[in-house]
Length: 281
Image 1 (cartoon, rainbow, N blue to C red):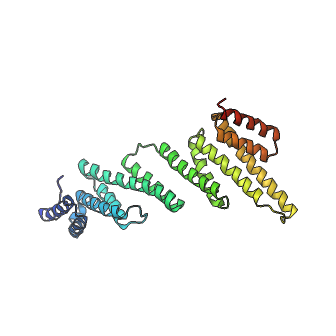
Image 2 (image 1 turned 90 degrees about the vertical axis):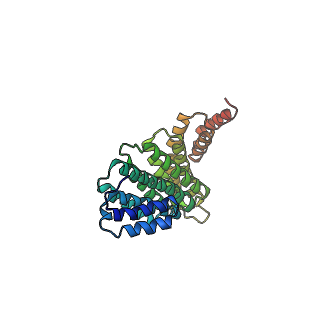
Image 3 (image 1 turned 180 degrees about the vertical axis):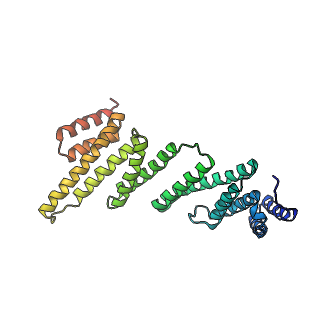
């Protein structure tokens, strides 16, 4: 690729490429920073591409840190390069870096979720992934990726809540994510099942909060609220059963839900269906 800058400044950019070829990113940084002291260089789209590339390589060292000055510098360099209406080879190369940044943000959103439980920052990283990917490919449809991401979020928080019902915030985060999945994919069995489980366990959690010292009026409120939660769980589990009649987890859950609702007939009915499913009938 040819540059529009003068020979004197072009020599400086050649030094950047020499450092890159030698895989010496610190050398490349010093060279590109020196080149950008020139106002002439700052008007050249290809020069901004070099800067974007060098700072992208530097950002790799910071791995999945959400805040990265190197990454921000690379992204800003891409923005400026594209604003200068570069030739197609330069624009394509610059957009390849932008796509790699978007992929970094996707990996980051997963790591922030599972390793640090930082859901807010995970969502922010996922939003950046979509923003930068769409800047490269404006025709992309994120539906499948949204289902994948929010299914992962919902399942993760559902598991955390089911393992520790005292963490009510996990249950609520799980429900919100799973609802997003069902908005996109109403027949998603996993999301439907996990929603049913969260509501059921929230009801159980209320029941378990009662003890011998609980005032009678408070007992009635707890019982009413737990019943509401069991009833909220029911349509989700019923839907899983409709979609997958041999799903043993759904059959077991329906047996327990009806038992919690004091519907002995229905509880026995699903107990029989569960036993039949275990026998392969």
